Image 1: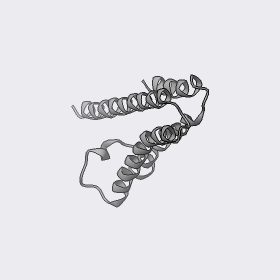
Image 2: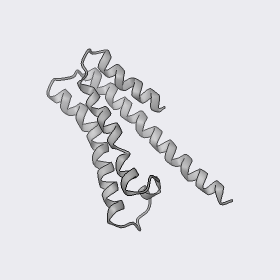
Image 3: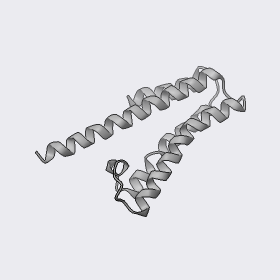
Image 4: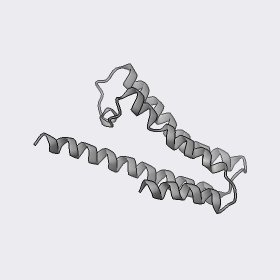
Amino acid sequence: MFSASILLQILACALYSNWWPMLSALMYVLVPMPCLFFAGGSTDFFVSRDDGGWVDMAKFFTGASAVGSIAIPAILRHANLIGSGAMFIEFTSFFILVCTILCFHRASIEDSYDNWS
């Protein structure tokens, strides 16, 4: 699923001969960084409430990066740098990326429960 998201990202640029939408690929790289740096690389911190300041900061930066992934194509479309088709392909790419992350999170939770059985 992740490769389909990247493929749509590249198609949004190549089909319209405009490489501005690749700016949102930068956000795809930045989204997991707070999780890696501040939460120890696990996805369990998303559903917990008992964490301290660093984990709260990781949640904030992850959310800000996710909003940036949606905002960049919308801003580029508003500035008439990309077409509507490229923007919708970018949104579809982001939706597939989010589904991939949710599936990974679900699989990692189920895997951690299976180890304790």
